[in-house]
Image (cartoon, rainbow, N blue to C red; front, side, top):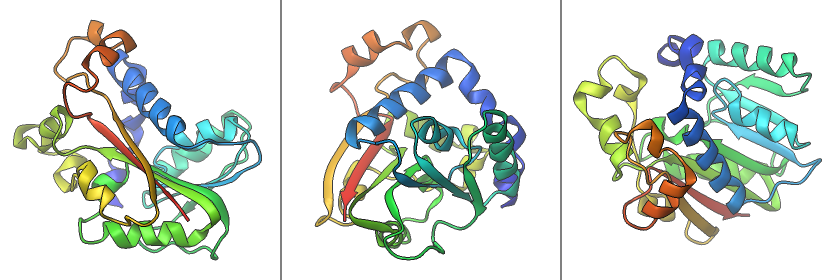
Amino acid sequence: MAIFDNVASDYDAWYTDIKGSFVDTVETDLAFKLIKVEKGMKVLDVGCGTGNFSIKLAKMGCDVTGIDISDNMLEIARKKAEAENLGIKFLHMDLNDLNFIENEFDAVFSMAAFEFVDDEDAPNALEGMLNVVKKGGQVLIGTISSNSSWGELYQDESFMKNTVFEYAKFKTLDDMKNWNKEKLVDFGQCLFISPLSPEEDYNYEKENELAGTAVGGYICALWKK
């Protein structure tokens, strides 16, 4: 998809500075607090982008397949995985139309992709992910919270202009809880530090201090089939 192809080459720069690195850490910690991953699990990473989370899963011993709609991002993901001798399978595929057999995966992750799923399509996208996970398997979705300081920044017109966030459809945790109430088993939030805070505030001491005083900038929900 052109909007993501255009930013692919610069996408990973976010993870190299103090803020981006810390954001990645707290989001990853929240994900693995909610879902337990074991070596040998067959895992699907939906909206894998440049492979950041796919690589984390592969390093944990998982058999990983990553899908995305951006060929440029997939190419970067493949090169990164090859550089680390990780046998990750990356495929061009739309998360709204998963082309896998039923019950194929032990777990399905989607980290920072549902920002670009239309509100009316999100419940069906979740159902598609539940369809390809085995009975007893779990689906974890993480996304930026619309009613947080981070969501407010990303929805500011001056910030959104000429970025991929022009096309974003941000959700709340309550939105996610309503997608499939019967199979929802857990949820959580993190990133309580404001995006406008100085770099020295990006640490777990400050994160824990602010927890519960504001809406987390990143939210996760977990469903079990």
